[in-house]
Length: 328
Image 1 (cartoon, rainbow, N blue to C red):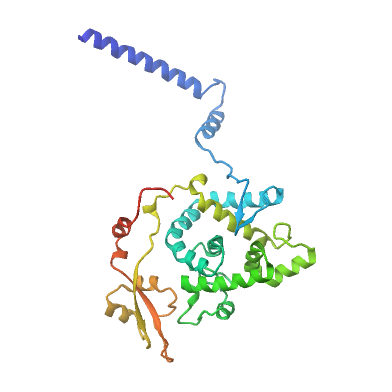
Image 2 (image 1 turned 120 degrees about the vertical axis):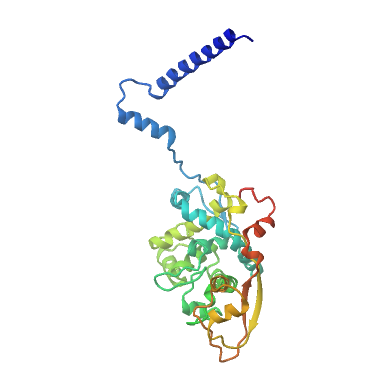
């Protein structure tokens, strides 16, 4: 091919590109009489889009059908789905935490004949975090001190089992099973977890109502079960709601060795130095420890967890994953 032909081809391409640019400008700014503000609005429509959260026609919760054809039920669930869908940062963190903690919670629910859907109650309560409420409900399941002790948890200034994920999940199972044995309905049982069983029963008697969906409750409890269900829907279908998270980006389950003690520990800083583990990692593994010491006059046995060196290596954890680049 000679230089003349090459020049001709280049010139032809340049002309086509110029014409394309002109047509593109005409397409984007369709009307010459549009103001800059109108042009800006058009750009927003093209490039910034939020979609209404998808509402399934069929939803089950704890093996029971949610009456999605009821307009009040549908709108109440829509509110919580919309809130969680566009509360991006918090919902992302919850999805990542679930990868670590659901494998601990799910077997305990199964072992205690409690529907696995109730793991989403813990999400609604604490976002899978050892949270502290203004009224001092604490831990993943947000137990008050009196209730925690009633269901077998140790709670004192130095040692608080509300912060132990497994032990507090066992206690939550006992609480929820007891509520269900009296209310005979899982949605009502969840509502009672929020406002108390007596409060739910009183409203049911006043209104001659036997179900959560038609029961008038205080604003927090009225939203509570819908929030649990919304978490279930989103966490079981994260991509449908715009949450794309690779397995390797989740918080990985950690491995621990354990040691058993039957004496007091006067200083956990010194203790951690002796066992060669940073105090920060030790406290993360044992969140039930609430002080820098543990007084043990009764010689009770305590099991303490020590993170393995492998668990401290992100690459080691990721190497254990099947298909780490897959999305949830």
